[in-house]
Length: 553
Image (cartoon, rainbow, N blue to C red; front, side, top):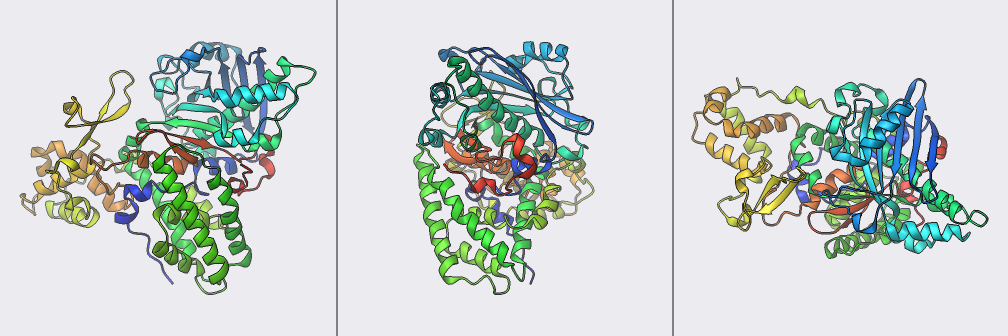
């Protein structure tokens, strides 16, 4: 039996993309798998009694070494902010290519804590900064100093001791350009070095609280229980800066979604499912309920989604346990058809992720297809005709061509770049100034404009002649020819409409990172947790690949 890939006009809607969850394809999980046989080491740990100072952690294999350099700084309470306009943080980090010399560390000590206003070199691969979750961090240090373990209930609500507010790479601020390193097999997957940085930062947070507790009470202090460590991750605050990425990298977005859709297709086409595979699927489903019930947020929007997910998941487990026989042919196809018919989008995509858990043989080859050499697809085939382009638009942008952009609600917002931090922002076109500085992120509107212009053009005319008079539409002409080859490269929704929920765009990307427990603070920024439940660095050589469902929280 052959199953079709899911329709991009459905899957690429923001409400669906904003319901994606982590899976075995997620970058942090593929990072752990890739680096499980590397040698982990803490090379330097020079902190004072208050936890301020320098530390270095590394992964090494053969002659290759990646080193995280950590600078923990003194920070007054009134200086701590997660906003991108902040200039000071509790800690700052750089991932260094190789073993740093004393000169490297001294150089970076002057530059890394300054972040955007500092300057890095080609020796540095990624850059980040992070702030303490003060309540959790201080509670852990105080408890350990008294020889006690911290309150698990408190920690489960927060999920981390530190949260990053940015992770930079690929040539920013002098960092190494991707072309220098992209052919290294171990980091071929997207954002693998960023995942390494965050993972090692997590270990630094545990070492720091243990160190401070020991200095506070040398005779009595305990070390943080390893099980508690495993069930703490690293938090992250993410705003609109992430949203344009998925618009500006269409072939990369396609490769991420295509891998996911291909995995689902291949699993639905399995004729006979082994008992151990169906048992593992059901076990992960049941275990994962703990992750959902410990998913804490004050957002009414997210609380509603969590309730829907939990109710649907319980409904699905009851269906699987009482009414379903995995020994029949093509059982996962039947499972998926039932899910689409009976459950909401949040749970549909949750179960799609869960279906991948037993199938390394399907998922692993797809991980290596999730990067993209985007420049190869930048050129526009100018010899093609107006008729060719119209047909592409009519086939690939069916719903978008129906939108009436003369209506105020469909043209409500505009994207711009903030002056102070050069970060993407969104504003109401009819209430705020600056729409003359609008960024080309309104793809749906521009596609519609392109189609209307093509409709009064001669069908046999070629694209080069069209562009002579319509250069302002070049960016969407390029996108149309990209989507012809890459069906999942385009969000099939209006990114400037009144009803847009921008965090759907953030959540899409963060799900591929491997984030858990999305916590919206508004419709434009959210907090997440990464690596919660993950093995510790010295446990990587022999860890449970399904760790994400083992959280005790």
